Image 1 (tube, rainbow, N blue to C red):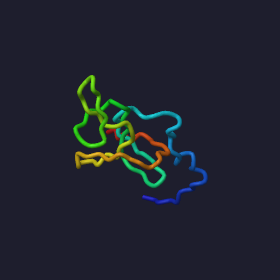
Image 2: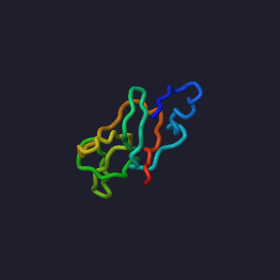
Image 3: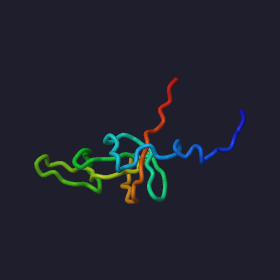
Length: 101
């Protein structure tokens, strides 16, 4: 295997975030790679009154008598069965790589 250095100046378009938030939101609940001002993480976007929850950070729908996760971006803590709302400014996101056989 040969390792080479990255010519970042010529590859800047390839390294840029593929979807700035200003160009649209991802599919609800889809796991994606999120870029904030401070860090990168795997997470998902939730629109309002879309995903039921009995935890914190919820909105209540009186007509349905149901609690829903508040609209926003969430970090997926894989394996911990927990998620945390991202409060940093979201710069962009991209789909996770999908491996095929």
